[in-house]
Length: 139
Image (tube, helix red, strand yellow):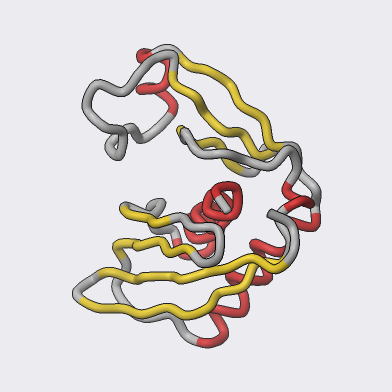
């Protein structure tokens, strides 16, 4: 589910030019991500977002980790969501050449292990778009 979150975040960045989720809640059965966004998604945008994530899942990209010093991490990543006093070196999850993001969660070895990505629902209020998703098969 953590790897799927990374794929969703990168798809949102690439499709809409918005930032990564500023808040997320990752669970085994269903998860959600909140984005600063100016409006609700259309049904066509839901479908395109799912398509893009599932295309990346099917690509079977390797999921690896790399550790960065505080200075290196600050140059390459937005560290705003890290808790104060975060430990270094910082663990960064790399998904092929598609995404790289600091993360402490468990991940699969390949995107092919994720299974089908499905947007369960989304809602928009007060400048926040919430996307709820689940996975079919995989982990």
